[in-house]
Length: 415
Image 1 (cartoon, one colour):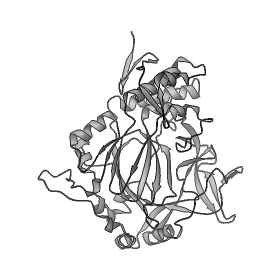
Image 2: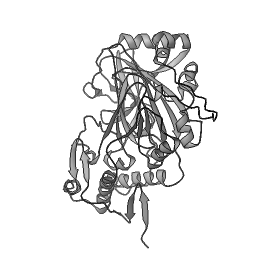
Image 3: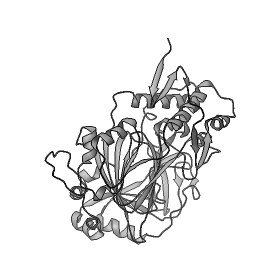
Image 4: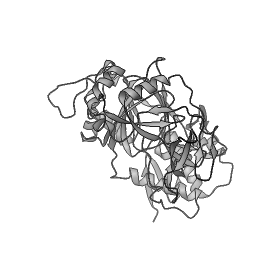
């Protein structure tokens, strides 16, 4: 009997995925024919690796490199359901300025998201008062990222008032964050970072709008009504607020959520890759670490979270804006999809899609403020199971004889 799997239109028989020939593929900004794509496979490879490359090429042949956009109107629940079912991103331009129907209402009543005037420093300070909030602190704006090719580094966290957070953020505006790889050295138990030039970022990723920032929740809403209608629920797993400047960068990763991401102030550029391109990502395991400011030595240190037991985190080492094809050659087969969101724009980022995020100021004195709603992905059906199968196949390439995911390797990053 021949086993056959179908995922995103790909047909597998055994280890073979049969592509269509003659369609156009994209590598970076260059268009490649399917034949040229295969010519890049100059090194001898086993059948499983060839099948993985064919899987990537077929997906790229069958799916547009452009991201769908809707302007001047809301999508219907059916339209959004189609994007969710096909696991394809969608941008709703000027979403915040549109009339938005609450998911629980069937009487035609509408509400608007709060206008930008509600997001001034004075308004934020007034609403939160002396309440302590959690902010992240790093030397380079590189929270949750790979440093020195060895460490997955989380930021240092501290509790401050909104007034103190905004004052520090304003005071460091215009500062240049440095390359964390250019100013590092390793000791036996910790890695030192460059001179202190802190970047602070509100990014706790724990549903902070339902906890520490609860007074701000009415300004954005507990859910995305059109998403709740399409997904059949009005209870996102988490609603998060993000406040920072253009020095903070989100490294490439994916999440097990249907993510709806709204820009309130500023703009952000998302570089996206579909789950099927896991083969291209060179996912690896990195020592779980955190930034720590050493008062005695007056410098940042990167310290393993469990020095006596090497705990690792699966993460993507590639910077899609400056890819290192020498160390990560499979990334040549990836096809980046890029979209810049402006004030009021909403991005539907499908579950398991890889994404890198770069923030931009719109004026010299502006902050970058965003909100996102995480809806849990549907684990029923084949979507997640086939993604796990793909990860195991790629893992077997990098670690021959090792095709089972450990609990650490089975983890998926959040951001």
